[in-house]
Image (cartoon, rainbow, N blue to C red; front, top):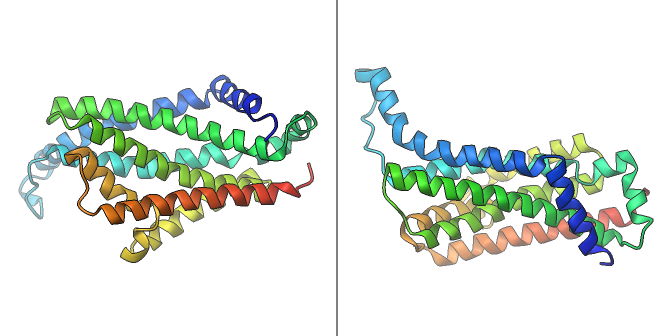
Length: 256
């Protein structure tokens, strides 16, 4: 892993200079603002618009609805942002020829890939933190304050789920050497795994299995099924590790 520290600093500085980090932070801030507002006011808007035409009465929104909306938006927009961050991380450098220049220095291929994945993880962490802080504030104002510790745990689980999508796309970027192919494979993985999560036995092993524990932790500070939550965490971590190792193996023999 020679050169990892220098390469990691380079990746983070590049994320700032190319505005990837600020753009992701702003996108997640919007998600954090919109989610509680949607949970609070969408039922009122539907009632005012449709009136008696509503098929069923809409219950009064509560703080848990803001959490559900936040998780839904992070699972959609956040996942797409993770794919976008990772799709050109390796293939872009190969296309520009900068990978060969970097690796001509005393830096290993393992350090090269690890630095990129760590930088992606940091950018996603900043985005999730921004969304969580803003969403907590708006939820406290519109509904009620919820346990801060539970929201921190929710943020960690949300970040872990998004990192899984980034890692899968990162593997595709390293294996194919094509940004377009990596984006396509990342999106296909998102769709396929989301469909597989419909099966309860599989849901507990996939990133989607983190959603319910995240909501429970943020709303009550505890989970009803600790075993299922732990299984989802272990399954997601395994997916990330396998993707990272696969990227290393695929990139090891790639011609620069």
